[in-house]
Length: 194
Image (cartoon, rainbow, N blue to C red):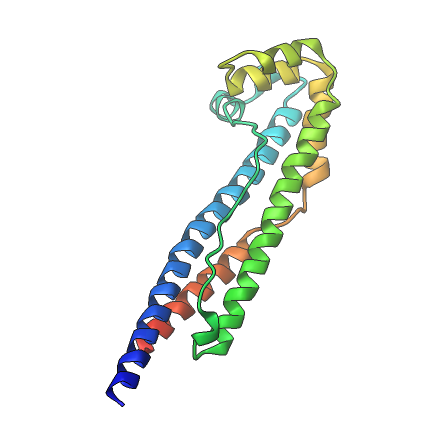
């Protein structure tokens, strides 16, 4: 009887520790989703700004021009980690289901973000301009050099026009972020009660 009580307590402790690890991991994932959302919106805003001023960059507000010309345009993959846990030992099956579902939502966001970058990469591959390709192969080029060269070439302008056209109205990560934060709160509540 005493051993059973010890085993139950040890199991509760293991589940709570595992849930704490999940919560920490979800917090990291949530920050990554926020960064992805910000990156996409910033790239689109930069492209829009440069397109809207392409006929006369001298008339554009200098601080905005400087800001948007220094937005890094990058193509990379997002990978988020998942922690396998003792969910079957969690008494709250709704929490266990929410954790499983939130990882599914995060997976969808990863797929979207990686597709976004792949489409942008595919679009970039269609840019057939020696000046832009020479710049991209140069080590240590700046974002300002990239955007300035892009707006000065017909192919670069096409690329800039395509970024917002292809990607506006695309996935908004805010709903996913709110769901991740909700599950993190549920984990806190579960741990506090157990």
